[in-house]
Length: 303
Ligand SMILES: C[S@@+](CC[C@H](N)C(=O)[O-])C[C@H]1O[C@@H](n2cnc3c(N)ncnc32)[C@H](O)[C@@H]1O
Image 1 (cartoon, rainbow, N blue to C red):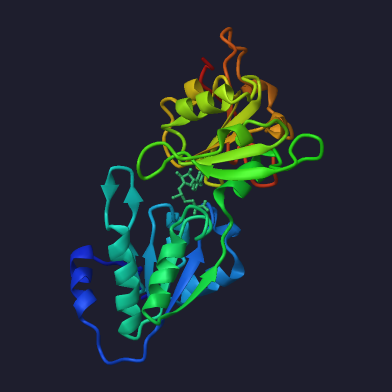
Image 2 (cartoon, rainbow, N blue to C red; image 1 turned 90 degrees about the horizontal axis):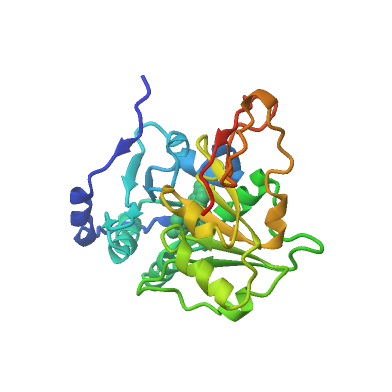
């Protein structure tokens, strides 16, 4: 009978650090797991996951993807969650090196792409400094999945000549961004980790001159079964973001006016007109398609 992958206790792993054996070092693979949908994995990532003996993964890696690990593989969750760092980044770096020094090949599985706000660069540097062979396998970053599913291109002739990925969360407060540049029209700004700072970000952009009427889109859980999209405007962004939870992207730019335009809403399930100008959220899997049921849900009111 096949065994399910085994989660490994972090307490045991601390001991690994000093347990370097005289072995031919293994290799570390920094692998992008994409935004959640297993079908958005690269073939290379899928192959490495299935073959790995040890997988060190983030909280953003979906359960369906972890289920692709071989029976008996060691799964180590080092999830960094807001206000709850399961394992500090330095310890994760040391853990990867320690495993490799024990002669083990390690798949370090990260949500999206390892080099887009994923701290993959730090892990790569640590491996290099320790003389450990390390290879990076790119993944589909959340912004690409979110815009694709919404039918809202990040660049679009006449509406968006550029796209910029920024973080809404910096280690010491507000990110140091060039707001004047980001406020220019006809470009898309994608904000990762910006749900809780949506108000300040919108204010900065508007203070720098970006119109309050600029189309915007919030996508929560992109590519997952519970994906939800909230088309809105820059001026209403903060109100829409309030109370949302889960991994989310804020996307601001004229091209977001195309969001969800390609989806049909069955009349029986179409949201009622909301007197306050309410928003409609469209959940992943609710668009018409060969294998998906169509359904829309009433979204939150814009403030
Ligand atoms: C630490 S960053 C990691 C980004 C990841 N490396 C990538 O390329 O997508 C975490 C943030 O990415 C965004 N994110 C990741 N997965 C997401 C998803 N499935 N849907 C929406 N946003 C997501 C959210 O903004 C989340 O707070």
